[in-house]
Structures are given as structure tokens and as C-alpha cells.
Amino acid sequence: MKKSKQKNWQNSQERILDIALKYGFSDHANFTRAFKEVYHITPDEYRKSIPMLNTFDKPELSSRYIMIDENVPLIVGNIVLEIQRKTLRTKETYFGFEKTVNIAEQIPVGESMGIDVPDQLWCEFHAKKLQIESAVFKNGIELGVSHSASPDKGMFLYFAGGMVSSIDVCPKNMVQHILPAGEYVVCRIEAESFEEIVTTALNQANKYLFETWLPNHKLVTKPFMAEKYYKENADFSYMEIWVIPVEIGNAEKELSNVNGNKTESL
Image 1 (tube, one colour):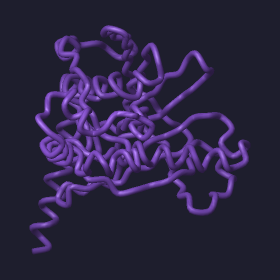
Image 2 (cartoon, rainbow, N blue to C red):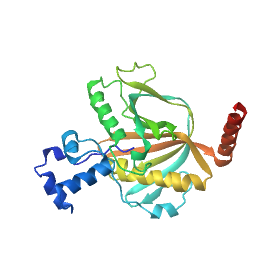
Image 3 (cartoon, rainbow, N blue to C red):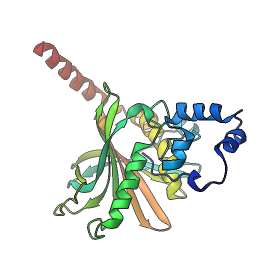
Image 4 (tube, helix red, strand yellow):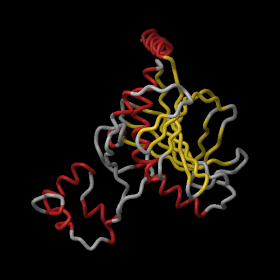
């Protein structure tokens, strides 16, 4: 889930009618209708609260036809991807915020656009982080986690927070999330700017990892995905996508066992 900046219309001198005409709409009503259909709020409501919105990025199709081995960088335009298997030997502890998210309204996972709930969660976390003693979040590593998926309800949980020591006490109104020790497939992402990393690069990395790399290695994943953000200094930052791999044959056995248990219970 991207942590992006958006143009602030709150201080814009343009009338909504002028914006509508600029982008080819015949009048205010048609623009408002189209805007609400896509984002589920009116332009006036957006201007008052400035929520984060999902947007589409231009797809990079060439990467879908390239297969790379583990620990071999793939360079696509201004983006560098590198995928490897990694063993996390000790669990990691994070404090932050968590909310329920509608799958259908998230890009690129969903099929429509709407308010970007994870982005709003990141804004809430960073605002709270500034009020907390800096020693709690001392290493600057941050984690976004999609988990506890409920496809039948069209919902999942998203956590946004920062790494802490396992002995730290969770601040009031925050929740604790544990990244468990275990085996992961990790996709490292680098780009020219942090803004590009968490928007275009992240979306393209997701597509490449799930649509090309994992299927070609005969792997699927458990219903879990983590985004790990590193900011080493003002000029250099990168992020990683963490997933829990399952070989396709083993995944089919697990599904068969689950279905078998359901049948027996009936």
C-alpha cells in the first residue's frame, strides 16, 4: 500500500466548475457525478478533508516477460527489483495503527478506485509518531501489513507502524504487531525517489512478483503481505515486499485437507 502525497486542492483558487471544464467536463454536475462514482465522495467533500485517494499508475509491461533468478537485480526504467528467499530468525515487534479495508477499493489489488485507507493510516501513524519519544521508534524501519483476509466479506486488515524493541510498552491507542520468525520471499525495491518507490515502483513490483516470479517458481503465498520501509538517509531509501511462500503442490494438499475436514464435520 502506497504512502503518497497528493495535490492539495484546499488552498487552490480554482472553482470546481473551472477544474471540471479544464478536464473536459461540460458542467459542474457531470464532473461531480463522475468524481463521486470513482472516489465515493464529492469534489466539495474532498476539498474539505483532503483524504488520500487511490490512483492508477502507467503499467510497465516489459517486466512481465523477463524472468530473473534469486539475488539477481532486474532493472526496468528507473526501478530496480531484486528477489530472494530470506530466513527471519528472530521475531520483530512493531507499534502502530490497524483498520479494516475494503478489498474492492484498493489499487492494484481491487478493481475500483476510492479513498486510500492505508494511506490515511500512515498519516495518522506519522502524526502520532511525532508526539512520542523518539527513542521508541529509534531505527526508522516501518512496516505495513495486509493480513487476516476475508474474501467472502471482501475485507482485510491493514497495519501501519514502526519497529520497536520487544521490551517497549505499546503507547495508548496503538496496537502491537509481530512479524514472526520464519521463511519469506522478499522483493527489494529501489527507485530514484521515495515517492516513486511507494507508488509506481510498488505497484509494478507487486505485479511482477505475483503474476510472473512466483508462478514461474511454482509458488503461491499465504494470505499475508508486508511492506518494509527503510530510510537510511535523506538521499537514499528503499523498501521490501515480504510474503510467506507455499509450493503449489503443498498448497493444494492443505486445501484438500481443509475441505476434507469440512465434509467430515457435516
